[in-house]
Amino acid sequence: MQLVLTEDQTMLARTAGAFMTEHSPISRLRKLRDARDERGYSLEVYRKLAELGWTAIAFSEDDGGLGMGLAEIVLVTEAMGRALAPEPLIPSLLLAGQALARAGSATLKQTWLAPAIAGEKVLALAHLEPGARFDLAKVATRADRVTGGYRVSGEKHQVWGGQLADAYVVSARVSGASGEREGIALFLVPASAKGVSSTPQVRVDSQNAAIVRLDGVELRDGDLLGTAGNGYAVLADAVDRATVALCGEMLGGASEAFDRTVAYLRDRKQFGVPIGSFQALKHRAARMYIEIELSRSAVMAAARALDEGQADAASLVSLAKARLSETYCQVANEAVQMHGGIGMTDEHEIGFFMKRARAAEMTFGDAAFHRERFAALAGF
Image (cartoon, rainbow, N blue to C red; front, side, top):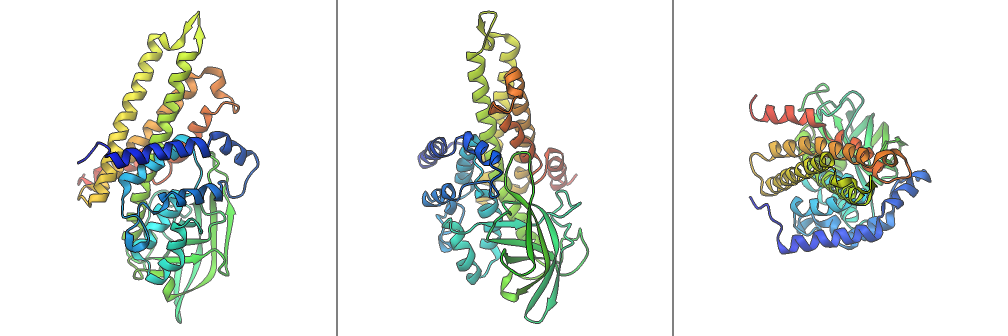
């Protein structure tokens, strides 16, 4: 498995890093948070990502994409993680977009996927429900068969990027009971459809999320993705791909927090010398570096395994998410602590990384969940 960047990938990583440095300083996130911006991100910046072609990376040329893969996506999300950029690349394109690309009809792709890749529309995946935690099969939302289509009713929580999204990919049950993998269907639901409403959710990291309610929403047969009752596999694949993209973002956030901490250790003086010269702090910084580099290898391995369709891809996804969930939180904790008292203040930016680490840890499953999943996939 290739674990070294190609020349093109290196150029992409540098371009992404330079773009985020120029267009997405963390001060922008602070302004959006303090203004209580309902969207929580900038459509202008999001469209620039599309102009650069980054929204098209993970899609085939037949779907209007660049025919690349997660190995390239994680380079972009790593740069976004360093800047804590709030734009919905992962929820719109790697979650809802991937589900639409895999199972959507040509009409749905033309109407929704193509504009999403172009940065003209924002999609979101509405799949989590109260009490489901990380179980994708715990779907109580019902899709009842009616003449010419379905009537969908239910409530989805923590819909990432769901506030002011243009459409949702919604999981609903056409048969069976909550917790069963069979009987789940995916539907494309326009946000403007009668019976659809959303309420913003306040997250500790200030990222856009919403509660989406569906009250007898009337959908046509053409709004169904794939076949009724067989949506679980599509949903699980989309979540795995988005998980790897999120791991790339988490890697970027941990790396940036580490770099800022090392710079502080060099600049901050106590007893007439830089505090970075103290042996105890050197050891802690070295441990942070080791964990980040191990995490980098895990992310690269998972991305390439999914791109290549390897049999152990799901296991490598869980390995990467388990490691990044622990690494990002550990590095963020150490970064705040080694910044001393100033690191505890809202005025300093280092605390934003701790908040993002906590939210990302609980997205798509925490370390404990993915260790259990890894063991189950191995037959234990």
